[in-house]
Amino acid sequence: MAVRLIANYSKRLGLPGYSSHQFSVSVETELRDVQDVEGESQRLYQLLQHNVDAQIQSTGFVPEEGYGANGASNENAHSEHSAESENPDTWKCSEKQRNFIQKIVRDNRLDPKEVAVLADELFQLPVQNLNRMQASGLIDALLDQAGKKGGRK
Image (cartoon, rainbow, N blue to C red; front, side, top):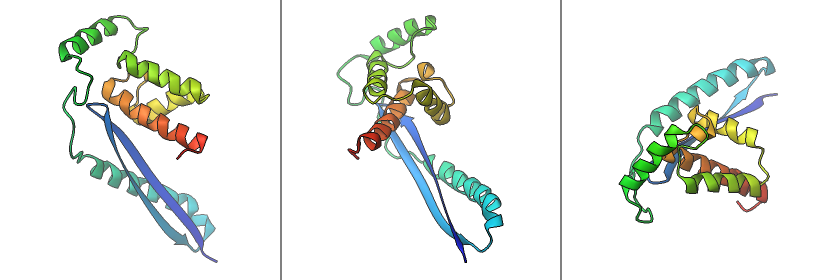
């Protein structure tokens, strides 16, 4: 009896202008021997990761900084960011993004530790150290997660 092994790998990257893009690949294979599961899983993971990483480098359209923004000038955003980086208790993303992340976590009763793990998996940074582009990617991922939890997806 053959055993089906299904593997998928997905990656989402934050982009400027509160944008992001995601790419995923899935494969299905049959194993004749259950003893092959561990080795085949490792092989597939490495193969999928390599291919997703290679493909996601082509970002297509990337909005310019401030694209679709509410008219705030880049000078204000830059001086605000400089002031924030002096205080280690502040976040590097915008205040609006910080508030939205906190609202998503609160409203969906997400574990802040799980959110921290997600930020680390996506960007290898703590949530507070995410820049605007990275925070946008985290927000997308949290909304996806919240949509699944709430059955709205």
